[in-house]
Amino acid sequence: MSKAIGMIEFKTTSTGVTAADAMVKTSEVEIVEAQTVCPGKYIAIITGDLSAVKAAVDTAVTTYEDKCIDSFVLGNPHESIFPAIYGTTQVEDISALGILETYDAASIIEAADQAAKTAIVDLIELRIAKGMCGKSYMMITGEVSAVEASIDRAKELVAAKGMYLDSSVIAHPDRRMIDSIL
Image (cartoon, rainbow, N blue to C red):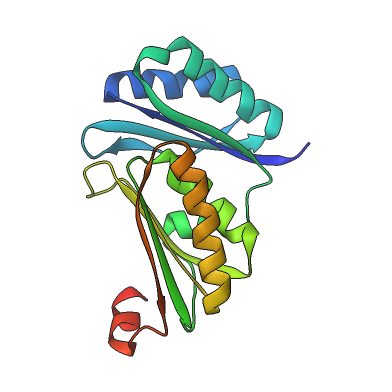
């Protein structure tokens, strides 16, 4: 069985907590993060075997469909996703900086996974709706062409869901900017 990550995003905290509880009661999954985020939405990120994560997310979404904003299940997520979520990524230098912003929380993790699998880039950070009025962003680094390709692919993915807000790629950002990010 393969490792997977899944997420639910709900309009209200009460429904989100109830849905997260249903997820862990449905399948053998671990909660990576479950909390209220701006503006009073609730997210829960889980991990486990692909079939267990899929069953848990499906249960939450179908049971509480009217309050669900978004959800996903990723089989075999890129290994850099978890350090980027926790803010523990170790990046020594930034050649190019890519930033992508979404209107929701779930899309940014899918976008980051796609970006990391598109080209050789490092995920620096995934900010999931905390202090951003429900929006989210990711930062990646690598060679300019790799960052551009990764941001373009991630942008396509979230735009198809209607959640794309903005993005940019900075070739060789100033050292002062790098220091403020790292």
